Image (cartoon, rainbow, N blue to C red; front, side, top):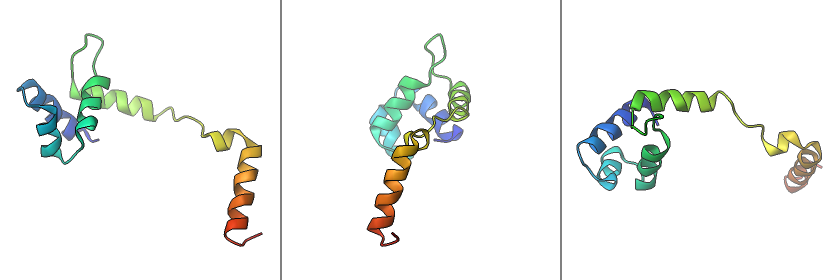
Length: 89
C-alpha cells in the first residue's frame, strides 16, 4: 500500500468513516484497512500515515530467508520433483 492510501485511510478514519466505506473508496478489502489501522501505529497508539510508511520500509529492509533457501535438502527435493513433473529429468 502506498503512502497516499495510508494518508487517505488516516484522514477518513479521523473523520469517522467506517472501515468498510474507506475500503470501498480505495478499492481494497475491509480487512486490509482494518489491518493497516491496527498495525501501523506509533508508540502512543496514534495513527500517523508517514510513521506507518516508515515502519513498512523498515520491515521490508529485513526480509526473512525463505525456508527453501535455508534448507538445501528441501531445495533439492523440490527441484527434482519440479524437473520430473515437467519432464526435464
